[in-house]
Image (tube, rainbow, N blue to C red; front, side):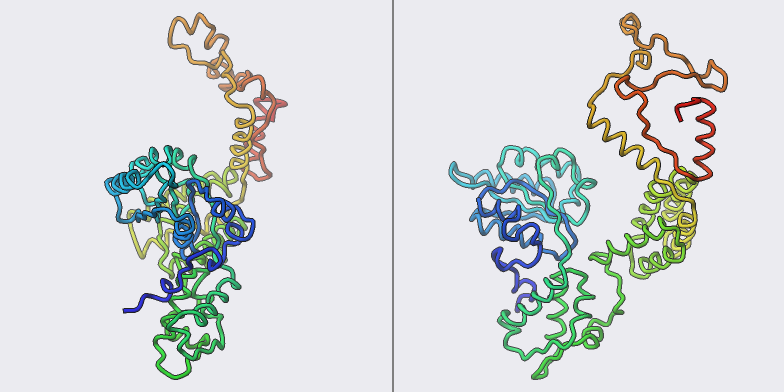
Length: 422
């Protein structure tokens, strides 16, 4: 039985590799490392079908080093330890570290990721992890700190066209057929920037045609796939584009657009919990203090969705979507925490002022911990003016209120308390 076209056409070296020029083009960072023979552990982050696994295999072939592969979907800690033991046995003084490639590394649990730390730290293996999810959220910090992250992009139209022509020209099966590409828009649309999907569709269309001359156009591709040309692909590039359009429509206060993109996701079979999570984030990030109830409603939407399930859950998502889209907007809280984190990174661990410190022991009290602290509830309006930050950043304002009714009331109250501070 013949291999699938995507496997037959899998690149064997960087010259055959299509796309990701920012990483493997002439003079690019990964190409330089590969050519130098010194490749550290790293993570490849990008949508499906953009060449993560292929790139890892090319690196192993180029460096002529043992290559072990695990899938996080069906591998456990035991499998990781067995591979690490094999890697130790294959190492000699003058050999490079074996490469351990882990596909879908974001699916590894914390304990599974922990089991990799020692081997990565000591260089027993060079880890190459592939993930479709943001490593900042899915990979444990100790492992993330030991790996560089490289972002792979969906293939451009030119890349996909080059791949199609190469397949027809070089594949030992397809080059024996008389193939004419009349139109390629449907092929590109259905592939969603995914090289593997493009080749699978091309293979399907060609293999289903037994005539002497194979004509490929948009109508034929659509009929063969028996799908709507506007089909939603929750695993590919369209997944990321549509959720982006959804959130931006909410942020832009356009309820009709937001509901349309929600409908696209619902009709396409998107995970309802994924949509609900994004609504909670939007409520905090984009609406914030302009309407604090938005966060409560978004959380209620998430909880209700889990209780009532599908398909009624679509109504709950719609209510939350319209509410968030029509709410006044403010990102003042979002900006304030980012600015404060930047100051923390700049100034380091400034000491807590003595009067704010806890004093549970006699010694601490003798060292003036908590001395002169004023208990706000002992004063009128439950407020007393005193310093609450280290003297080095006194006067820095992180939260900058924005012009909306809710924050205007907050500012009015703060001015009454603090006079000139806000």
